[in-house]
Length: 306
Length: 262
Image (tube, rainbow over all chains, first blue to last red; front, side, top):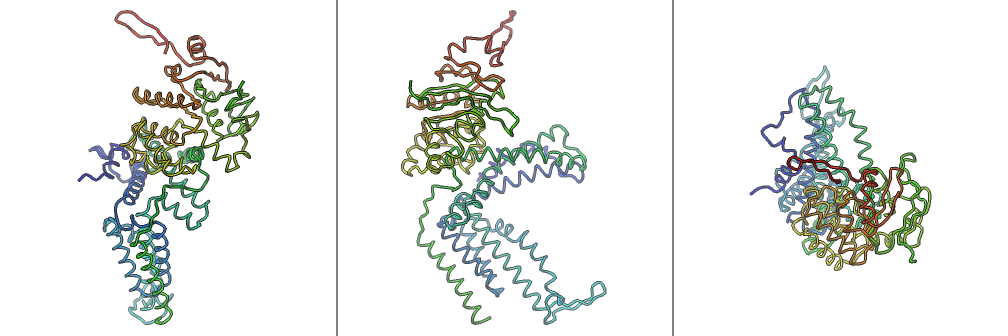
């Protein structure tokens, strides 16, 4: 079956040139800056559209009352922060993967989203902690590097793994909420939990005008390319991008004002109101109970066994 | 004489304190009247509509709506602002800035929801606006996927569902195909029959006679240089040409050249 998201992107967002046989290659130094800028814009649009499409699918978390979903995730985030057990964190991540599968999210897509970037970045940050210089303890492996003796300790490996798994579980929980809740519903839910109006309003405005800004950005770079061609030196490309930054900023500022005016004109006062048919079901309370039970269990294990 | 719905006395406004938007403007719009604002680019038409929607305020002069002076302080009163927004609806020139929700349906619902219209009533209005503008197939689509004509109709629907007493429209038919223009004209005529006040900025002189009771012409000095009935102003070709509103178009019919105004 034809993927509606891909079809939409191909037809409406991504310029034809990127799908035709004439697609220019991202080749080394020539034209790289312009090409990459346009393609990153397209990538962002694609990711955003995919997220919204996922949140509209039929699935377990999509059907869960957003208030209960957010509360459950906050409780589970509490578990991830408080637990000192790698096994418990691994189970938490496994639960996230299971929830993703039951929420019609492709396993590969979810693993890619959760394992790359932030957890991987945190893994590199935590590497020094595995050595005896930072975490003294029982030696696992000793070697010489740059003329100095280094020892990897069991305690160091444990603390690094806990840190990595904690980040992984926390990022996964957050991504699950974002992928299964439509943006404006999420904002409405944040307000129910008394998140400051200014913060919610800023998030709301960002979402509303980012598409317009990307559209301007996209058109600007396409217009530049139509005049300078695909083959420009990296230096020229960088200069063109830099020269357009100021103009882009001014345009974005104007767009921000216009979008805000359009919202105010229809009665917006900073409090997002959506047609929320928030109706909790029995399954929602089950999720909440399970999250609460997990948090209490974590606290209990911390108190009596660690 | 009945009190005008909108009244502007010697109103001036400039952007960033230096770029003139309006200059000593006097205007009165009667309740239920259809007003067309015409003028060349950059003469202040959009600025006027933005001011009538209380999104900007006069830096000089007085602006009243239904007898009440509109100032930033008055608009800061939440209850008054809500009532004003219920009464005055503004269709922006660029539909892209007006359609900011993930789907067309959510965009149409945005206004009534913010203004506290009860949900059953919202659903009734949604159904009516969607049927009127034939938007049913577009409801679940993202506004970014629509054509310019579809976007314009969605933007109009997003204001019609508020059921305002006053409709402000900035270039509602610019760049649209003939059928979409006809749809929009029909909507404006229905709004008029329902007793709504319509104020529209346009360059499209072909439709003005059909949808306006009075025309105000803006000049380069950013104020009204002439007001009158459509048949009177549209008949004055010399005046329209002088103010860049029509041009003489020459084309060939077989072997003869033929000239007429557009």
